[in-house]
Length: 596
Image 1 (cartoon, rainbow, N blue to C red):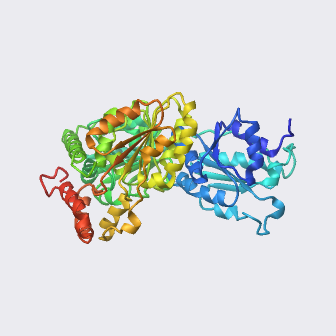
Image 2: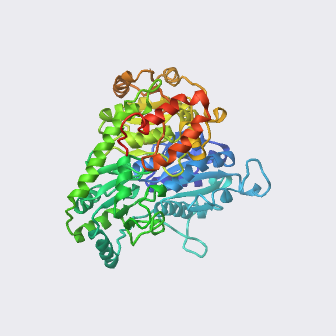
Image 3: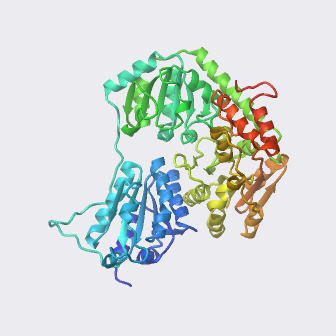
């Protein structure tokens, strides 16, 4: 048996922290660590991605679906640079990730050696904690601090281990000056506001006659408490994009996602409420909040830095969402606001009618909204969902009502394309017995998805449930940005920047030994979902969708943007005819407008 090294100690420490797998891509800067992972592969699995950025996304996905620390590794130089996008995804969405990055040997640092870059400087902004390990004695302490920082700050932490240090023998750690002995231990605190703050919040909420709750991902473990408070206050509930999975959208007083990609019901609730309770949300769409001065507000967040960050609040409650809501519920007087609750439920009902009308609107060849609409009744109760960034997020946010217990994750704040397939792989490795549905556009597929389907083709036979369904909205256009060019700039679409090359996603899936289904007729969508969700292997549903379907914000914000959008489309000439026609339909210019 080979002599033990610091690299073996890293594997031991990872196991002590409960790490089951490490995502990454090999390189000479971590060859010693790769050897240790080989020796310890029965304890800690190594998962090879096709690119370090995708490995980092997998680690973020692992953290999001499990609540545990995701771990990623790469070599120095280009490998480390490639990690940054995924690490920023972790930072901005507040999830714990530890990156173990190799470095050239300490004897050559500072010599402008091959692949030598200043790694501490590279990760300074993204990491809650970062440290270069200079000795065997230092490694356990640094790794323990990285895990504690990641868990406490809900952020990425980085451990840089030069190649020669990885190969050193583990050090005994005597009790002496200059040696710090640590343990792989951490526990989440119970954080609860004081009685004075709870009393002040109760006073604000008790006098509200039109109460809205904005629920974010901070309510992940507070589903029951959110509903109990909402029922006590007769409140309407809206969610942030990241909060969507943690509230049951089948309930008649849940108005769906807020923001530019949100529902008309959410716009009504936030636009007419007189009291706002924000729970675990830091959503940046401030133009969709109640106008400042319209509503008195209370905000609950575990991170005091987030309180009052998006809206002027009267009372800040720094604490765990579930415990704080439970403490509030005990103090709240019962509300009897039947008129407000009726108004909210009517707005939700109107939105459901409008959503179906839009999904069934004819397009060339397929309306992308209908893709999600047809998935709704077919999504398995034990599914996991991964969503990419682009126009597909709009259709997910508006149409897909997730069954209780079905997690859905995406790059919410960094909004990085290319996350869905890496996220889905991480979710599937966590729960190989559950079906996975990944929703993506062709832009994101061409960034990372096509490559990571190779990873899926390599892994799927070991999954107890082989269903890994990738739905690609193939419109040959970067549609979200195309509509942003029209709406925000009044510019016509710039084909050189927006048009994407055609790629046969379904045929490519078949080439990899997966199931490929290509759809050009909307009537076939239901059958396509049925086939994919009953297949004996992963499947790719390639739907040819219409890029002219507008990404119209919920009214009244959507109405304010119409003039500029029409100006951009007018400059496109005949090429913009279909977009102009569909925009008029969606805005209600060819019939009654349920959004108004």
